[in-house]
Image (tube, rainbow, N blue to C red; front, side, top):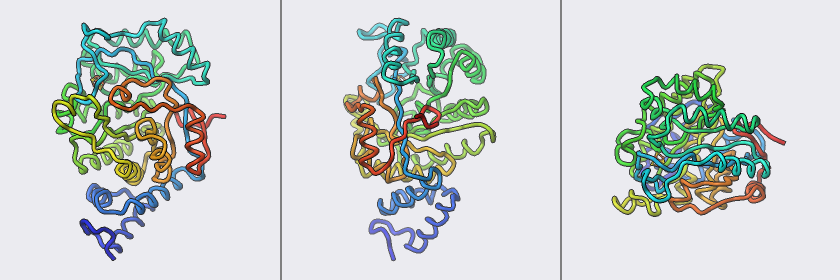
Length: 374
Ligand code: SF4
């Protein structure tokens, strides 16, 4: 039996053997991942990924959370080719968020029942480690129960270079000042070939991984991401997943490591990558479901796979829960980076609960550490 009409590298029996290996949680290698991504029928991939989801998280619960994105600043020297959010320091509209604005936004977050902010922004050459440490301390003093899911590996590398200190020292100071968890932002595709085209001024692939390696030694909860669908090859996507899996394998036994993986497609509207280089997003719902399923299949040691309902919308979000995802992310009260490149989707708590229930799952509100909340 040949399962695929396009490139029948594996016969049905061989592919069944590979599926068996995968549901026994034996890691698939790059070639096997490529074979599945390119040639396995989507229905089969979704089925296998759903089986794996049940092994990692038995039952019908699917997670969601409330948090708020607050951007520290939109001034950034990096000028990534996919980003419409960054400004030069003297351009109209450039800002650094004030303490009054933080207060107003966090008060609103608490009124809506959330207690976590995703604090991100540009790499502003004027803002050093001292700025972020004072900001974190001030916010924790004002809101002792507030959780700070803040910055990301590129900012950590930037701060280490700016201050001429080690990555460990930057992380230590930030943790001491109140950093609760580190988002996996800025991973894009962990290939320097790709990074040279889309984000040449940002941390390299190895630097990104090194920050996460050290964060795991500190037992700082982290997440991992991927922004796909631009100039990368499918092999580079699969290699990205294997790099994450290998790094997760290295983490100390008692460390949380990567708590979740979140892939999302490139949003091309108005980006320089699209207007100057003619690179269009390859996004389609079927490709997204394939990405979610292959992520679940390759990442045998990362428990949570989150679908980015903010970027792919309601229907694809629902189907993702049948393709290996166990979480739909957050009611993002404010989001500027993705929305500035073409995503105009925002969801209320009721929307997310309804999407999960309509998909046949039981909505479970959670915190950033993926612990269940009442
Ligand atoms: S994606 Fe982030 S690092 Fe890149 S230009 Fe935009 S704000 Fe700067």
